[in-house]
Length: 413
Image 1: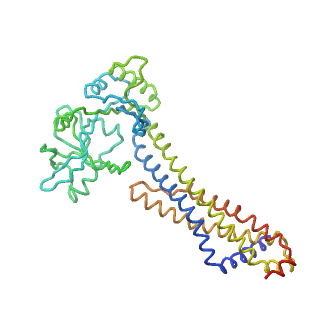
Image 2: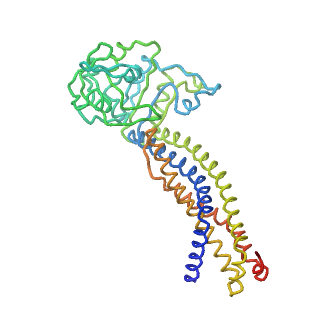
Image 3: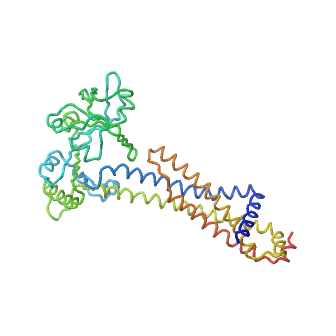
């Protein structure tokens, strides 16, 4: 049996080589469909990996309170979306004072501006730096880490010390080849001593997390006196088993602060870190559906092309089939020979498509700064798809070849 399979495979490869140009074109048609499928799935895998890495550091024992939750932000253009009032500074401070859940720490922060210019001696950055007002709990609650220097202390925050923590990109730009710790930078004329540098975080949805300067809240409020500042609250619970009760208690506390009656819906957003990851990942499934849609359409065309080339091959080799049958070849032997040809062409197309798809996906992931990961699921799906294409496309030509009458086949010119 193995010897027969080996011989049929050798004959099939010989037939493929004899029609090399046609085989290459067919392989490329199949490869295009597989490239589209694998390429998109590779980008989706990279996106999911990026999301997981960005939010995993926050752990499953944190949640945040802000004007809107993630689902509302995703549906930002929905005309029926409820408009929530901003979280004002008095409300945020009141929450910090009144929320006393066991083993909890609350951080208050706000984005002062995303268009600041930072100066160091005679050098300055482009006006694209984000300034964030924070307190001493901001770093641990957000899963951030200072690789150099230290975090803010309660003393820094209470005494409004002019100190700051920089994002990692400042070591590549403003402080290239220089240790930033204890250096003095200038923001809108105010001078800050650098006490820490954050661990590299990368970009999230195109927004760099490493071009930030963290400064104490009150100083940020005095320098950037923008009206209607919207504040964020982040809460960390000591034990993740207590997160459900902690969230419920936070909702009750915030509703009391905002003086909401029992029948009103929450006019603020509350987001658990684990729910946030799941929400973001669920939205990436849509891209997966697009990949399969594109892949199915192009693979359907590939199946037609592959079946067509095999039918043409059967017609061209009718006399050869007649000779083989007259020498005692069985129907199953003839059918298997042509089916093997289809299988080889299909798998070659799949292999080329996988290599091209991963390459395209890698380049796109690098360009948009996603964390690339080898898409094993996409590779398995591509191999399975090309196998199914080969079966569907090769079955009819193989049966047609095996059913040819040997006498009529010998007369064929």
